[in-house]
Image (cartoon, rainbow, N blue to C red; front, side, top):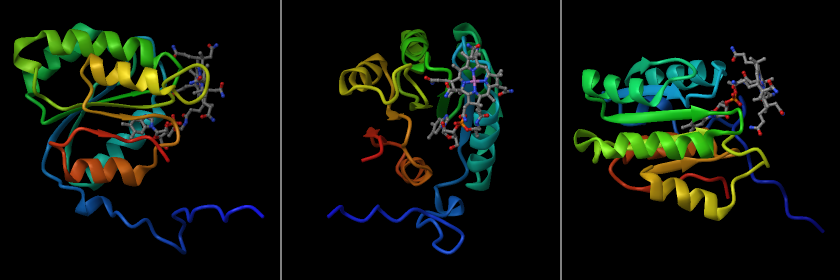
Length: 165
Ligand code: B12
C-alpha cells in the first residue's frame, strides 16, 4: 500500500501562506544568471513578490555579474533573488555569489537562488552545499514550492534550505 500524496494547494484548498502575510515592504533585486535567457520565471517571481508587498527591481534575463553588483549599489536591496531554469544556475550562480560577496558592501545582504538549477534534475546535497558556501542565504531547487519561499520572506534574516521534502 502506498502512502497518500501530500495535499497540494488548489482553488478548493488554498495555500496556507498568503503572499500578503509574507513580510512586505522590502526592496528586492531580481534577475537571472548571465547565461539564462528565460523570462517567465522572473515575471512570476516579480508578481509574487509584489503581491507580498515588496518593491521589485527586475533586471531581466542574462544579467552580467558586474551589473548585479552595480544595481545592488544603486538600490541597496534588502534581498537579492536569483532565478535560473536553464540548468546552469548552480554553476553560474556560484560565480555570481562569489562576485557579489567579494564586494565589501555586499557581504551581509541576503541572496537567494531558485529554479531548475542543475542539468540532471534536482541538485545533489553537495551542490546545494556549494551554493551555500558560495554565499547564498537560501536555495530553492526544483520542486521547492511557493510556500517555502513566502515563509522565507517572513523570516528573512534566517539562513534556510528551501528544498522540497
Ligand atoms: C519557454 C521556454 C524557453 C524559451 C524562453 C522564452 C522566454 N522569454 O522566457 C526559449 C525558447 C528561449 C528557451 C530556451 C532554452 N531553454 Co527553455 N524552456 C522553456 C519552457 C518550455 C517553459 C519555461 C517557462 O516559461 N515556464 C514558466 C515559468 C513561470 O516557470 P519556471 O520557469 O519553471 O519557473 C518556476 C519555478 O522554476 C520556480 N522558480 C524559478 N526561479 C525561481 C527562483 C526562486 C527564488 C524560487 C523560490 C522559485 C523559482 O518558480 C516558477 C513558478 O513555479 C521550459 C520547460 C518547462 N515546461 O518548464 C524549458 C526549459 C526551462 N528550457 C530548457 C532548456 C535546456 C533551454 C535551452 C538550453 C534550449 C537550447 N538547447 O537552446 C535554451 C536556453 C537559453 C538560455 N540561454 O537560457 C530546459 C532546462 C533544463 C534544465 N534546467 O535542466 C527546460 C526545463 C526544458 C526541458 N525540459 O528540457 N526556453
